[in-house]
Length: 113
Image (tube, rainbow, N blue to C red):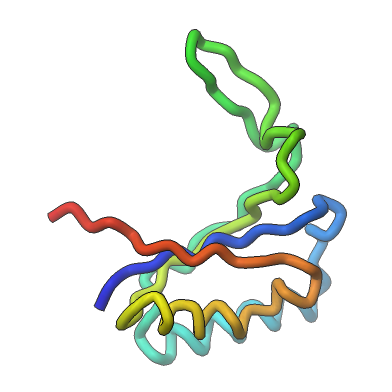
């Protein structure tokens, strides 16, 4: 099996206030993947506001982050194991982030042994 990062994005920081029901729905989604023994890292939530992120650039330039010119904000990730990318996509399709207009980037993790 291969490892895949599921990277969660939303279009609007204002959407990033999940209700208790939405949190429970996400926990149920994670539990379903864990029950299949395919959850490698439950990941973390990444706060998208400028007060909670900075960007370090060349020449020691530090700016508030995430970038203001981006259209989507990365708000979290998980790492799953799957037979192939299509299997990982099927796991992603069941995530409740789509109900708030978010999306999920599915990326294979390069393993360096």
